[in-house]
Image (tube, rainbow, N blue to C red):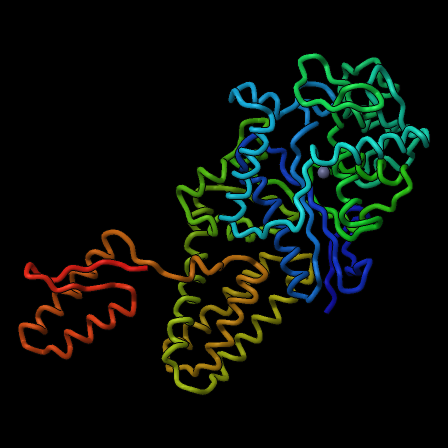
Length: 481
Ligand SMILES: [Zn+2]
């Protein structure tokens, strides 16, 4: 079975062939770190995390690079307005780098909760100023850029392929650009590679053109090429980034003589109340708000129920349904793990056949451009068969195969069942009540002078990390870890 990926560049599904046999290089546009991540960020991160996990499952070695933008992303896409991070720094009365670091760590805390694997490399724009200046110089040398008053712009008209990814023609590109254009641009479609820093601008570096800062698009060109090399395999990002961000990335790389990404992947939006979720319009739910209400992996499950290229419609009813669906799977997984310990030797042909069907359907779904809704559906087709098997005495080998399916596909590929959700921990009132009951029964045994039973209870509790001490005022217990 071949793995087919939809390539935004060719507008069709193509069999995936890496540049170097057995290895895959992926670059994904990461967040601008000036506020907490919302569900839209999660959709992008989870989509490409599943891509990475599927490639690992297929046996590839993967280098996954995802950047963090900490300079150069302006409030206005037409190279005007304030730097988003600097603006936030004023509001929070912090240094711009304090803002970037604060939201950098908060972003990764949220992604950890969603069980998104950390990138192999997380390059930051401020850490690659030299490379961005070098590429700008090269584009100037080749005549694809021009300098005006300390800023350097890419000359869009010199790159006829500009628009090939998004399919935007020249007139659409102009219509998409802002009306009030800086007079120093030759053409409204041109974009800044380097910007002169005005006196009030805090984030600034020396350059051959005076003090300034890099444009937003150039960081991704230099950082992807630096860590993955020319003609690397996959470039991903949100659908909004196709134009102008990714068009600009391609033009900058190719005009400087580099082959760029071979497959382009774009994830779709999340809708909230029927409208696109976006920071800029205020229509969003942060992940932190959601995590206070539901287990973060329910959010991951919710996102995987829609295809990465489809819109995810977020509703309260949908969240409730996702919670039920997720815990049905998780409960079955936990039951399989429990039952396996005491199961008799042997196999259960009916369960084995159902597990094989799950694996086949799952692989077919994932090989067809990461069909996560169908992959989850395969689990829910399997579940009644599994539950039926669990209601009879089922052999250990078959339970081990069922467990492997949960572990390799459910956790390994879909990332839904990390160890932390498998270990059930009793806490608070439930633990207190249970201990009270156990100790009460043990006291009864002691009163009956059944010391053997009382000791067995105490020893078994000790094995579980609960120490019981008999005092004149009755038994006391504590947890030792
Ligand atoms: Zn980017």
